[in-house]
Length: 241
Image 1 (cartoon, rainbow, N blue to C red):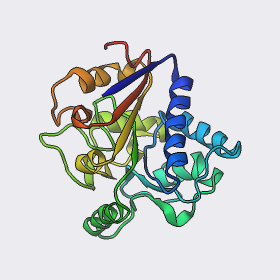
Image 2 (tube, rainbow, N blue to C red; image 1 turned 120 degrees about the vertical axis):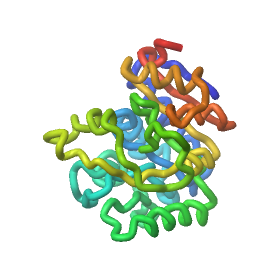
Image 3 (cartoon, rainbow, N blue to C red; image 1 turned 90 degrees about the vertical axis):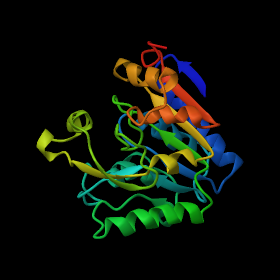
Image 4 (cartoon, helix red, strand yellow; image 1 turned 30 degrees about the vertical axis):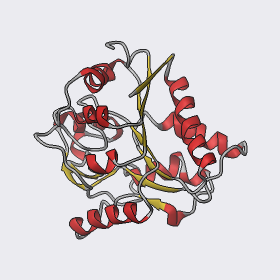
């Protein structure tokens, strides 16, 4: 596990964007796993800038998002489909058919999850997976549990996650209580992983990820077992290391 401690959020965002861009430059048809939330927004801004400045081309890139809320339409402003369109996809030349995000309105969730996994496998797996981390140590929407969920699945969100995500909604009652998420095995099968964290509220989760025992109670701790993980964290998120 490689740990890059940077000055602040902006530097974290630039370093993450440069890593993603390097992956695409070296392999233009890369399969990239993407995350949502506040943490990667700066990275997406930097990637859009790199694209507009002519440094990176998304024409042959395929993407898979980590998760999507269950029960939200794609055009709902709180859906991760909407988030990705607004923060990255509508600003670069990625082909719409190369964008993969779980369908939160799928009638048959079992089939939706199976087909998501199958498509990742058909494309040869994920080359680079971008992760954020929750205050409770979740990656994707893999919440603290008694066991690691292997593949894409339906998750019941923890109260802590619902509370943290309520800042994006008008009220906590509007926050979906379930989501579709890539599983731990799917994430761990990525050839490279970068995890981003910023702010003091992530410091304990980062400490447990790096120095704690590997346990489903801190899902990110499993990253200790991956051969190519880079943590890009600011000084505040690194404050307990």
